[in-house]
Image 1 (cartoon, rainbow, N blue to C red):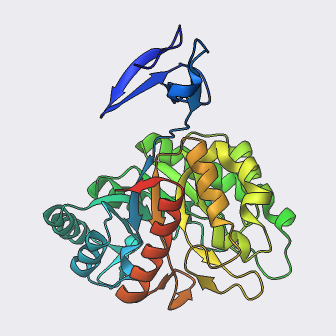
Image 2: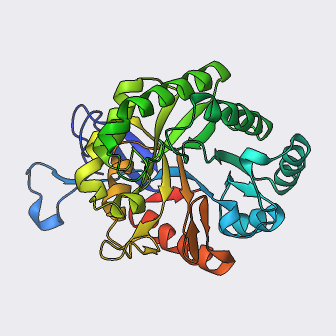
Image 3: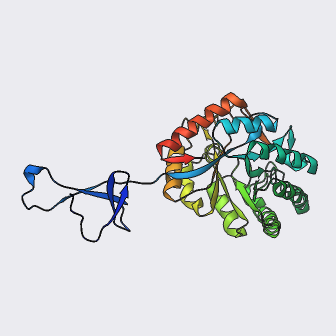
Length: 330
């Protein structure tokens, strides 16, 4: 019978007796007797075994990257093990233009399939910053109604394009005014805006995304992190951005890209430091949504497309990285 070290509390797991030391890096340990020949009054040898529990993340994905038909979108996502869908368009209609009856029909389809909505992927902020503030506020009101109809609190947004010849510094005040107004409307409505870093907008680099977060300073505005988009503006995502933005990071958009060409590739096949990012998120206790946005067939201003086969390949590549880091996708 092994001798239990004083102060340790035994916990039985299966047929093994594990010992919980409390606040120690070795969460579960076992004490084992030494071989028969080595006993003779000597103290029991401790064998410390690290036993880190797996994390659980909710798997989602951009349905319109699969097919325009929500029923097909839902079927593929469910087959890939997802519990959620991110809605950017349905039947070829962007969320900013969906009619109430279309939203209700979409909700019925997803409910029937047993799929929930992780976020509404809106085009808010993918316009020139010179447009009046009310332009995007009006669109956001419409999209908030879609989010509420689909029973999600998250709305993905961007931080405005600038005209050719204007620098990021030139438009900073206009961007912050608009982002503040959008966040105020979101807070009033009880939703959370997720700013996605994107090439060509003000918030394209980690430093400028941080500027938006700190300047607006609203719990209704958080970060949707996208490794591939950072790569496409010359940033090493984990190395140069993760520590800056982790306090605001609430949603994980999954895609990877090559630094040399900007081409989007499956997770782990590019320069997006996906493995390091996933490991860090797990270590930090992230337990939110991981949303697949593969862009493997085409990309355009309002989104991208992969098709069922390429979307499946992207999902399997991400699942392999998740498994490597002991993350369960549900």
